[in-house]
Length: 158
Length: 158
DNA sequence: TTTTACGTACAGTTTAAACTGTACGAATCA
DNA sequence: TGATTCGTACAGTTTAAACTGTACGTAAAA
Image (cartoon, rainbow over all chains, first blue to last red; front, side, top):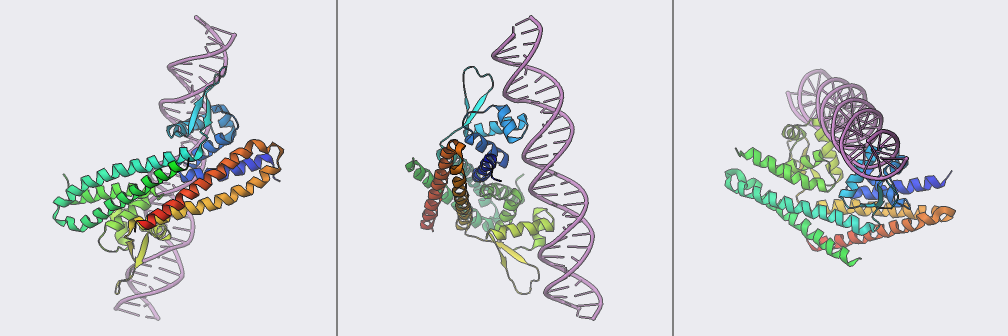
């Protein structure tokens, strides 16, 4: 039996898996999808009810999503409760969040590796590691290049 | 005090974080890095000793890494124990593993969404979801395009 | 002002993942 | 052949994450 509810559930279930690919937890992914599929902004209580999770869980989930700029708070006069809505330009939002995460990480890491490089040089036994370390640095540079490339590509896709 | 051991530990710790970005668990990432930094292939017992994990853990970890084609088994005559080594072309290995994961997922997902689309059409209340579903499909198409683009780019980087 | 309703901090609980030790089959060595 | 040593399956344990309920501060409503 294929009720309306079941279709929506399938849709939520499937789409959440894609969201998880961007590094979100299953719970957060599901929350986002729920919010995205809802035709109007939701309160914490509504989300709690819909997802079957406690209000506290929903609250922390919303905080996570907000930190990633995937969800926004919406104001509606006369409504006392906080209202939240999913950002709707899926591709740009997720790609940017994702690329920023990668590029930010790579920058940090290149710094760390460069720092370690100096210490390795000072060591007599360092030669063995030295080549590997050089490879790692190259590795990071290639990743950086790749993701900068994507960033440019995605801007063309607007 | 900056002993040789501590430098290697730092290196393992830092580099593992990058490996984790590719979707590997902290434990698997650490195992890979340990193997990568070692100048010669290692046995399960050696890895167990070096990582401080049980032999069973190392065993399942190696299986995971092998499934991802990030580690290879090495044969050396006269040595009875299984020997493993990390694949050394980091960028190609990880990028391909990564891109395949993404592209494979997107293909599956497009299929699922197309299938759900038919059911939604049949529903009278389906209009509300319909637009969202269309957006999701577009979303997946854009991701697909992006990752195919990267795949081409990375081939140029050889 | 008092009362009510909301969001969130916090401590405790549940659930799932990671890990370990034992045990056993297969392969090597004596 | 029997003894040893390896890899791995499996059951039980530990550890970390996710989640819940209570309790409290704040702000709106009466």
